Image (tube, rainbow, N blue to C red; front, side, top):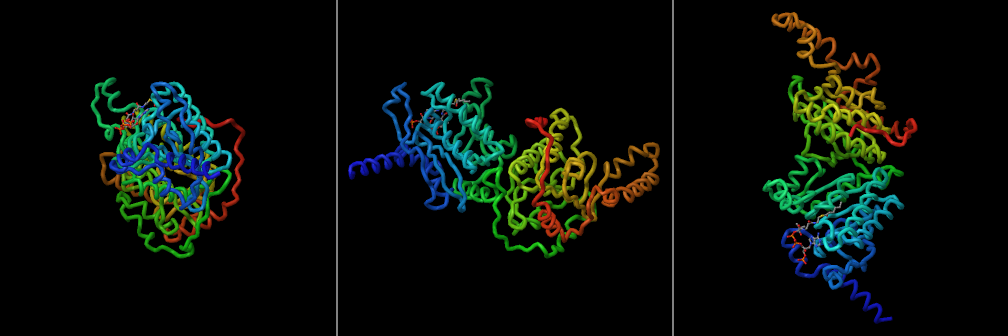
Length: 510
Ligand code: HXC
């Protein structure tokens, strides 16, 4: 008996050593933690239950039979984050560069299947060199099995990918099909083909960082939803994110204790919108004042900053905030902003997270760049996403809601449940200047007449009352009571049920 226990301990110790001390040191020298160190930070202390510690690859090509390492380059299992179950696979770069063999893929697939069956999120931590080159088609088949589970799990359990090193070749497509991707600055990069292949095929000379570093993916491609300074910060933020999310589409998001009451007024909001309608103000201030304790987890903070998306809580329950940002491009909707917000809205709808939308939008961005880039289809994505969403939807127009963008931004017509407007709201087909120049074109050379017509248009349309008279706005509210009104509204919508017409699935304009 003692011998077998010693054997177990010896094998465990070998598995815990991964690719050996030298490679662990190399990992540290690059500012990266090992797979097991990452797990320790990500999970509640002592909660990790490992699976498949002793799995080894079965390859015999290129002398691989002499290079078996227990675990085969990925640590898998489950544990808890603030007491809630999560499943994990964490690539171990010290073993064959974390590359994926058939056995390695089977470990991941087992975890994905368990997570789906048991209704808990999957977190994948990537730090790997793609397909195990020595395994050929078996590695490709393994990727295919992982991808298929990503698709089947989509909309059922939250899937989060954390990129903490290289993520190339076959490794990129699994994260791309998950709900969120987060990266670490300077140590992580993602691309389908690396700089060497790029040079061979296109003659382009580019570094790994320029091709697929965190900056590129959080500001240009929008592949990643956020980036952090180092492994520790990134993993701590993933714990925070998980606290906002439900475990599956069968459950509501968790409720956490809150200390900020909803009944008080926030007088500072009454002066948030400047008297001059062309002056910007920071919409984030409103979000922070409405969310419990100002706790806001922003998604895609550095991409399409003209729209803000992210999670907060009201009365302890998660809500998804979507808000135009007048500080950037006057809060206009363009293709990037529409895509960004549409994806966020769909995530919230999949996972029973109510939507709170703040509107100050002068319209869609005009110009050839936008039109050639498919603004019509991208704008339609947001329109589609808001309309199909059946979660509770509360909208508040703070200032401009012009043209098609008024409709798109969770208006009453897009099946929002409660639509508020501040007294400063201006709900119209377009701003006064543009409108007058079109409908009074004959007077264009008469400044006095134009000024008079502009004033007439402003008085008639640039207010919330025309829409309120028609019931498109349910109530014009004082800014200082916004948090209270939204909290009470969400309470009233807790049992909302909506039947959709039968369909296999919709055909969102991708
Ligand atoms: C087997 C691999 C490997 C791989 C790395 N290693 N990638 N072993 N298969 N794909 C091994 C290395 O041999 C090395 O072993 C150890 O991991 C560390 O790698 P280094 O190259 O020393 O590290 P570094 O300099 O940091 O470079 C990391 C890297 C590089 C950029 C990831 O290793 C690299 O370019 N790897 C190959 C990437 C690639 O082309 N993958 C295949 C993609 S095709 P030792 O023993 O020396 O420590 C693909 C298709 C799938 O994925 C498509 C499915 C849809």
